Image (cartoon, rainbow, N blue to C red; front, side, top):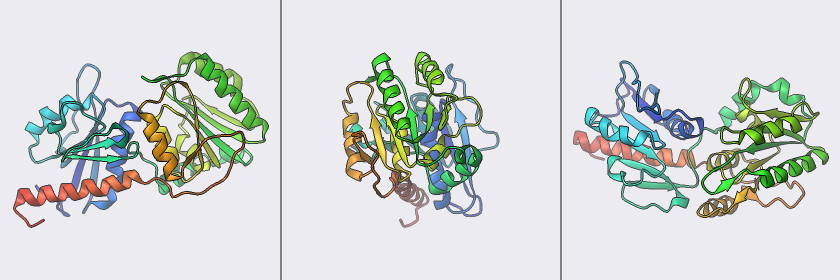
Length: 318
């Protein structure tokens, strides 16, 4: 099978459907789309908890991009069904490295191998065009918040971190202090935010002047929040939200939770070295840096490997 401008390219995005997982594979597929010849069709494939999978009708994948544990066992089965497909996995597939033609791994995981390329953080969907488009959909609500504005991305519990009562106390006090300095706040919590904290923050922040608190009700303004921010504050446990914030070009500050960073200290150091992240010392500073474009970089490398593979399978010169 070759890259054919007449037939185009079909990309399957495979995950368990959780937004934070699916968006990594989807972001990589979207970064590939303008780089491929001919029309591109991106199909979502969701693996349910019981293992049931609904495959796209009348669709055969040229490129298969999976993310999350649910996608791993499906890859080995579908390699037999689609032997000409190029299989890609985002993250670390543990002991199943040989099931994939290419693995896109976070640099802080320190993986190495002939079929592995690494990146700072994880792939994402943030581009200038998407930010502008999403912000336009929330113009009225954002303009109701006077400048300057700070976006606050709140995650939750993970293997290494907890959003427990001391961490919630700190976040609430920090955000109150920012608000008292005259900043408008655009605050969003995630699916991992504990219900007790979610409810506490809703009671404390919702319906206050110069604050937009979003906890999942109604259209999601997440990308609009990123686009409209003069500063972005992100809880430290979320690789996805950190790299998405650093893809905007806005100054980024990291908010601590309870726990120890372990290998994620390497991610934080990479983002600081890039110039995107600084420690918050009580005053919002302004600085500039080149927006993080790791998704676009690895998409170029993926495409080069895919084309070499297709050339090799058809006997063409690379």
